[in-house]
Image (cartoon, rainbow, N blue to C red; front, side, top):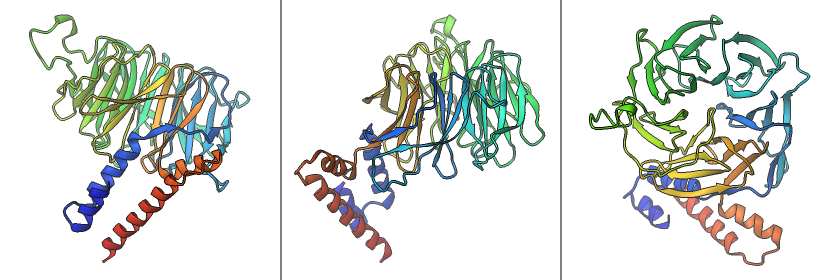
Length: 403
């Protein structure tokens, strides 16, 4: 880092190099926070989390008992140690609530005044955050496994829904109705995800072992079907035109939208080029995946190299996106981890699972270590000294930018 700062000062490297290096350092150093906790509201496993994209302050959680919680992540105590409160709950007494498990919760991308939930009661509900009442509701013929709303769309306001059927439904929030059905899968659609680059591009994963990319402007068929063998005629004929040899229950686009990560019950993680649909053949090794429902992966933002966080049984695996190298394992849950979301601004990671716990994973910066030393009475001031040196170096960098 000091070499990068020196190169930046001399004009050899751009400010972006220092930024990406520091972000990667934070992303590599995640560890379970010992001084943060969440108010307990869930009586069953937590299936889904979503962080609001406007302020990165409010965290939604959806539980197996039908409860939805809204947690405030703003720390008002003045010290790092705190318990994040639940500011409102769609509880069992709410007459609009889901009758059974909530499988997915999503914020409306442009406004925290609305969020969307779906679950095993075959309903998708659009909620008014202020009144905790449903502004709209849709009923399906089977269990709703996953839904997603595009965070970059400017020309449509569509919700993509994967459910217990062999098609994907597109719901238009503007007119309050289903406008289109995407047909191509042969079994239930477990996971759906909008592209982070193209507002018309949608990825889907199904129990039929297939992952597809769709251009929703095309009415006849999918844009491409991902093939794990890249069309190799000598491959096993039983797995041709399949992305995995098991259910595809995890999807995640990279922040730039150029690549897609898929996760399957064949215990394989695969990386695809979204422009060509080709398998990049990155070997991540075997990753335990016994879950039969949708799993939420997380991706690092602005770090070089890029990192993907993958729920695997009771842990979260940390992998280099393009190298496939396992960089570490985040341990802290006592049961199956179902979801993890990342704050792009602070590099914090939030995870939840069947143990009913929401955990916070923090970068181990010198500030955190100095606070731990203070709490434990450690007389070693090295962490504080390093923190002071880093602040001074950053101040010098800012001064050079201002000159």
